Image 1 (cartoon, one colour):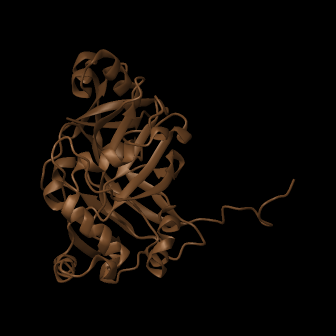
Image 2: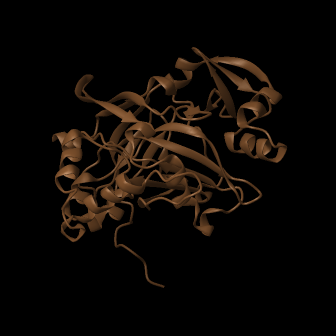
Length: 331
């Protein structure tokens, strides 16, 4: 089952079930968050809750996308209560990365770079046995719900940015129940848009490089994630494909289990505030920047996996400085 959030012509919100080329309204549902909280309170799965509430009017899916009326598949009415975060060094990566790992496997850990050390820890302990805690992954904060753009919209590139490149990833979408427990609703395609030039300058700039806009969706895929996923990531410039590469994900292509990544995110009490929404990026091994490509304003990013329905498409556009002239005021 795959769900979207969308707007009617008058701006009213709806939740829809994707049914081929149609989207069927879920009766009585204006947001996936509300639907999920109702399911939690009733002791139901999200799919069961959709079945209980039933389906109504049908809409043409391609028309909704073409008219930019599709919203991110999960949000919060107060963006400050939506936390966007992610984990890096979670995927096995390219053959060259694995070769480098093998070449350093017998080297004293003190001689490894910090990046390779964390990657090594993930390879060795990122998939613990049931009931055990595995290696802690790299973790980063991207922002709150205000930095999420809807599918089809342009990703802003601030004037201080040195780069604005795609990162095709899966996202886990979560709601914190009134019992203070995190509940995974499902997964969505994500573009964890980052500043790779800044990150490459010094790894301590990673936190800065991640404070950018992002996108996920258009669809929320309910249920368990297939262990192997193969799709595409591409960039179009002036309507032509500039770059394209296979995008792999799923636990067979990862050095961490999803449960281990979730444990190390939700072990923090401040992330368990009832009613809050969490969007968590799970990492990638596919970057156009690694192939020497520099995205520019006007380019279009396209990320797709067959199991997730319609691809996630976003542009890139420059924005004005965020601080007013004169900088910070003094009181």
